Structures are given as C-alpha cells and as structure tokens.
Image (cartoon, rainbow over all chains, first blue to last red; front, side, top):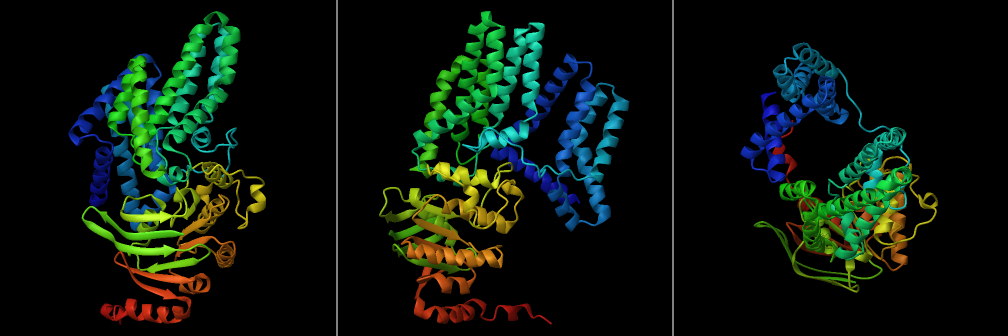
Length: 305
Length: 226
C-alpha cells in the first residue's frame, strides 16, 4: 500500500511538471490558492459549509470511478482495497477537513469525513448510457462533448435571465450571459489527440479560422435566447450588452487559439497566466490574440503542412 | 505511388527507423510484419506526416496526408461523442459530404451510442468505417484485425480485396499471417527499425516457416517449463 501512495505522489509531481509548474512553487501556490478561495466562499455566504461539503464530496467521488476501482480490486485483496480506498479518500478530503476545523466547524467536518468513508462502498459510473441530444450534430466535437457534460447549466442561465427580466435587474441578465460564456470557454481547455487535427485537409490558418468560426456560431446559438430577451427587455442598456457580447467573442477566440498554441501538448502555465492577465485587463487581448494565433499556426504546421 | 528513400527516425539518441527504402504502388496491397517495437507504427506515422524524420517521402499527391486514411492500432475516442458523430467529424475534416450514414454502417454498429462505450473491436470497426467514408485513395491499416470478431474479419479481408480492384494502395500491419497472405501482393519483414526482407506472393508460405524458425528459435526452452 505504501508503494501505491508513493506512486500517486510521483504521478502528482509529474502532472505539475508537465503543466510547466516547478514543484516547489506548486506546493506553495496550490495551498495558497485553496485557502484564498475557501476564505472567499466563507466570507460571501452563510451556507458556505454546505457548499464546501458538496465540493469536497464531488472532488473525492472522482476516485470512485468503476474502471479505476475494478483495477485496484484486481491487484489488492478485499481488506487492503477497503483500507486503501478509505485512506486515499481521507487524504483527498484533508484540505477541506483542515479548513473546516480552522473555521471551528467540528461537527460538520466529522460528518463530511464519515460521508467520505461511506462513499468508498460505491463506484460511481461517469458514463451513463443515455445519449444527450445536442444542436451541434453538423460539426461535432468541442460543443457536442462540452454541451453533454454541462447541459444543466443552460436551463439555469435561461432561468436567471427570466428572473432578471421579472425583477428588472440587468446585471443578473449579464451574469447569465457570463455563465454561458464561461461554460463555452471551458469546452476549449483540453487539446484533442493529434490524429483529429491531422485529419483536416486545411492549412493551419484555415483550420484555426474554421475552429473559431464554429465556436462563435455555436456560442451565439446557445446565448441567443439570453441576447434576444435582454435586448428587448433592457433596450436602454443595449450598448453595454453589445460590448459584453463582443468581449465574449474575443475571449472565446483567445481560448480557441491558446488551445492550439502548445499543440500537441496541453496549454501550459504560461498560456494560463496570459489568459488570467487578460481577464484582469481585457484590452491586452489585442496583443494576446495575434500572439496565440502565430504560435498556433507554427505548432499546427507540424501536422497540417 | 508512395516512395520512401533513406528514411530514418530517432527518438532522442535511440534510432527506431534505419535508412528505409520502400515503394508502394497504386492498386497494390502491402503487408508489414515484425515483432512489437520493430518500428511498424513509427513507419506509418512518418508516412502520414505525424512524425518528423530524416530522408524523403514523396507521392503522386502534393499533400499525401489529405488522401490517406489512417487506422491507428488503438483509435482514440472522446468521452461524449456518438459513433455517428465520430464519422461525421472525420468526414467534415476532409470536407466530404455524407448522406445516410446508417445505410453505410457495414459493421452494424450502434451509431447513436457513445463511441467510448464501445468494445475494442467495435472501436476499431468504427474508426475503419470513418476512414472508408472519407473517400481516401491510400489506406494505412495498423493492426486492423486486432480485437475484431470473425465475421468482421471476413468483411475487412473482402474490403481490402475490393480496394485492390479499385486501384487503391493499402499498407497493412498485422500479426495474423493468414489474412496477410490472403490479401497482400508483397510483405515486408521489419526488425529493429530495418526492412530485412521483401517477400512476394509465391514465397509467403516459406516466409511463415522462416519467421517461426527465426522468431521462436529456442526462446521457450529458456523458461525451463516443467
């Protein structure tokens, strides 16, 4: 069992190195960000402990994936497997537990740890055999996959738009647009296998134009109910709405281009930092978009030329 | 036609392909055999343009890869893409218009299910269907029979024979010698990144015997099984 955890530790280190993060910085930065976000959550809402508990459970439940656990069952006997699963769940939950103790939420932290132990009894399948229909059949890929993983976000966003109109709160409407924008943004966080890029009989430039065009059209389709509702209900604010939509387009273009700027590898820390900077200072996108574009063309040329 | 001249490939200091010279003609079926790690997949990746290499690979086409259907040993699938969408994705990549995909589902695959839930053999058949519908002229099939059931095996074998009639070029790597012998015009034997032998149809039977002798030798005796 000791070897198993040593191996997990090695795998974590490798992931950080692959991401371009030096280990020392990673081990300082990650707890720092975790504490920062936890503080923010506990400052903002009185129900933070419940949200925190759900977050911890959803984080730990990733370890209950059936294929992974079937593999573990095949190499460890029943007792060792149970011990191993309980130990790894508790380790994964440790940051949450420590923070809850810091917040003096002793009972809640005990209940959370009991839940974490309890879920070792189950394997959660992440692959339901139900095919969720999408409006993106014509050009399947990022939006098809992404929509199926996040379909529940859209009714929430549309409902928020309805509320924003009912209570006359334009900002809430803009927030629902932001929710859709960020969701679509997440569809481009992972790079596809090089085989799928190789298959295109397009030049790198045309490939990027095609990808960006598809992204913007599909984003427009998903956000159209919000755009129409807000532009009718808050006609006076239409200029702000147009600026906001254009910003969404700019960020989506940036993420599509950033995705391929490290091809065939995943986006690394430098692209992550540039994207984060652009969120703080949007005009810098005028520099970053051409930069990501030229990097992507160079990288894509290796398989498309 | 594809012409490979003095092809070499290094991963760091390790040489995986060593000055390979080959020619693949139109309307011919070629087999590549060799042990695991002999360099077959790397050779295919170089021909496809998925790897950098030393040497020269030329063809009748300005961009060979745009006319090439590549079947990988282990096709990759996204988690939430159906079989039909996978076929559509690969057809879109080549700007091929597809109609009635269901009618062309020769392996009777459940096309509306997520491809990632398919079995190994079904994944292979889906990937093969997708490259067939791309309307390619050259096919590289890396282990097309792996994990595939006997019925589909027969279909693939017949398909390869049909390719020959349609003047397409097919390069296959396989460990199933009987299928290669049935379909190929020439078989190349690879070892340690080199082509060590070219065998024509007339000598296929001798090749199998020779390979058995050459590959097995006294290896199993070393285990001292009791």
